[in-house]
Length: 354
Image (cartoon, rainbow, N blue to C red; front, side, top):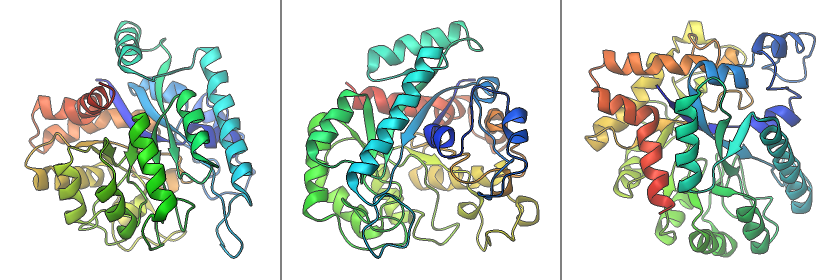
């Protein structure tokens, strides 16, 4: 079955973690065994071969670069121009992967249909499709930069990441989007860029939903009812997204799957985090909606965490192929399973790109 993953930080892994995703996953891990600069060294789960093995033929792949103002303790660039340049370096990597035949950028319905036909014909040999998304808008120096990156293929944008941002307030921050943020939303709406509400704090989420009339999704977000944290969506948030016909991607980061996770101490095994826990969050949204049409997968695998902080039964991204069986065991129909695996995403982007 075709699996679509709505959130993967591929370029970040290539350029900041120095991972050659064209190589086998065991080789990528082996080259990191002596490294201690990041907690997930030697525990990565994503490579192009593993994506193909699991049937992950299409993904949303990110650019990401944070600007930090003086006094902001988070890691990031000291100017928006530096952040812009960093995202352009990430774009250059995607272009090289296209030249190698590993990836193909999907920009419109025609490209989507051509890719799906090619993938069905030669699943293990075809390039993996990717839709380009920007996680956090700090690198958009001016609205002219937004149009430039749209011309480069950007089709989705999340205005904030962690902390305070230039255009919106993100996880663990507070406040609305402000004048610049609303100007960004208007230009996104004009260009037809999908609004990704993932990471928006409650105030900025409310502001965005009040002012944006284009297509909305949450690429990688889970349920606050199951894990109480501002990074998650409350049932009221989820109901509003359902009313907007949004799709919501289930994320695999363990601290967003179970309560009371302690970074560096908890393990997937002792916390009981498995793919079945991911299904719990999918099922919660389906029960709220009364339908499975609003759920998709947005794993965020290797999004600054690895096997030490993802479901215990996920060795690599290829294990996403196990989700259909787990959904079937919960009583989901074949149609619902296909929709969660890929159909809801495809319906959404076809409508967004109509």
